[in-house]
Length: 111
Length: 112
Image (cartoon, rainbow over all chains, first blue to last red; front, side, top):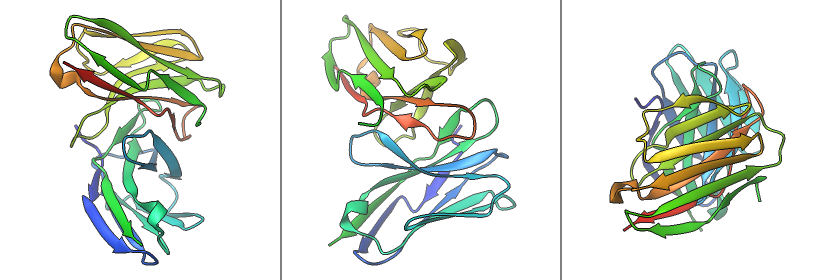
């Protein structure tokens, strides 16, 4: 069964704007991760947030985690055309280091 | 290059063919994974190997057969596939728990 579900499925913004993507999941987790995928390529790991953490930053990325609501958000500030990609959340529910991925958010940043 | 190399990048095969996908990592990671990515579907975990032992076989049809001869190499042997098996097959590795995966660029498989 699908653990993570991203919202929205697609997002189109202008360069310089902020982009926010949300992820909801169903079971308790050890950690939640965000990945980026350019069209037809492999996924690139962006950030990992553990279940006892509430917020993490990496460059222009900010991730929050609310375990009471079983949700996470990824914020990309000051977006660039090069940020155009699909973004996936993935959860590690504790059964070994096996990740379950959501369906992704397709982000388009217009120059 | 991510450190995880997949070959071939593209593969077209008939339903009666036998082919193999290869994945190689020299990152010193302990776990390796095969995922399938079909259009409009989330990534599906197929197989997991940890320290060369298979620890997960996620109800994958027997026409897919994994092999992990050592901690650096992972294969996916394919035989008598169906057109619905056409997809992007992604290999990934990770050092341990609480670490992100490193993915290869994938093999785009088309079954005709």
